[in-house]
Length: 307
Image 1 (cartoon, one colour):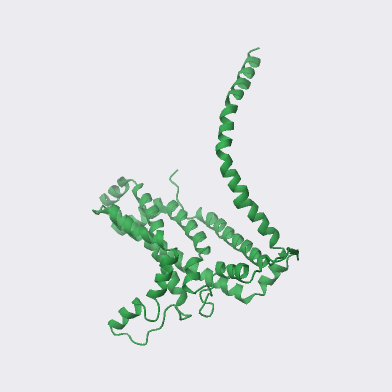
Image 2 (cartoon, one colour):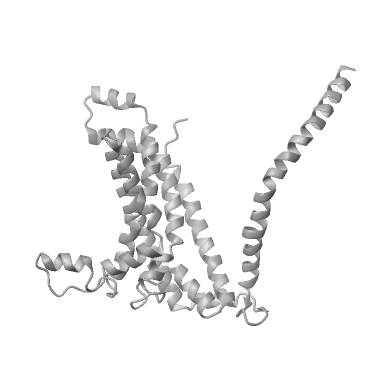
C-alpha cells in the first residue's frame, strides 16, 4: 500500500515538473533551431557537395570520392598545408609564451593594472580586422615604417618584407603573435586563482622565483595553458583575414602566404569549384579534430588538476 502511494506521489511530482520542462525546452528552442539550420544543415550539405562536381551555375553531379583523390595530387593544396602548419606550429607557442610572460608581469601587483590589461588586450580585438591587416601591409612594405627605422640606424638595401617570399609569412606570424591579449587575460585570471600560501611556503624553504615559477605556477596553471593551447591551435588553423589582406587575396608572393583557408576560398568563390572546396573544408575539419583529440590525449601527461 505504501509503495503504491509513493508511486502516486512520484507520478504527481512528474506532472508538476512538466510545465518547467516545457519552459526549459522553449528557452532551448532558439539555440536548437540555430544548431540545425546554421550548423548541422550546412555541414551535411557540404558533406554531400564534397562528393559532387558543383560549380554554383549548374546542379551538383555525383562523382564519388574524386574530389578527395584530386587533393592528393594538388601541389598548391600541399603547399597550403605546409604554410598553414608552419604558421600554427610557430605562431601558437610564441603567442602563448608572450601572453604568459606578460600575464606574470601584470600579476606582480603593479599599479594601474586595469589600464595595462586593457592596452594589452586591445590588439586581440583589432588583430583580425581588415584595417590592422592593411596597416600591417604598410608597416612592412618596401617603404614602410620598419624599413624607415632600419635605414635610420644604418641598414641599406632592405627588402619589402611583405613582397619577399622568404619573409612574407614571418610578418603574418608576427601579426598573430601580437594579438596575445585574449590568452593573456585568461592566464591572468588563472594566476589570480593560485593560493599565495604555496609561494610563501616555498620562500620559507629558500626556493628562488624561477624555481617557484616552474614548480608551483606552471603545474597549477597547466589546465589554463591547455585550454589556451587548444583554442589558439583551432583559431590558427582557421586564420584567413590576415593572409587575404596582406597578400591581396593571392597567397603571394610565390604562394608563400597561401593559407589553407585562403586556397579553399579561391577554389570555392573565385573558381566556383564548390565540390572541391567542400572536400577541402572537411579535410580541415578532420585535421583540427585530430589535433584537438591528440591534445586531449597528451594532456594527461602534463596537465595537473588539483582534485
